[in-house]
Length: 121
Image (cartoon, rainbow, N blue to C red; front, side, top):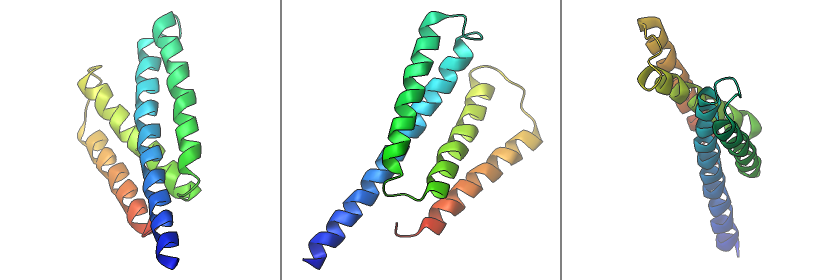
């Protein structure tokens, strides 16, 4: 019986991380659509942004069932921030500097640290 409970708990944790991954991808899509909406003046990207953000928060809520709030939110926002900054540099030709790149590395290091601190959860 204990083994079945342990297996179910491990499945819940894996499911939480999958929900968090989906929340991050949807947040990235929503934020990119926000940029493409040109200040919410373009209907298509504006509508896509709204759908993506609602779906992202829904997935984040599901992830919080098995991942701690601080860890999940920090990873969601940290990976989102770092990836959106990279999208801005690569796709939208935003300026890049050594300080910006070092800052992105620090954000990623923080996300990795939080994940490691979460341990077996």
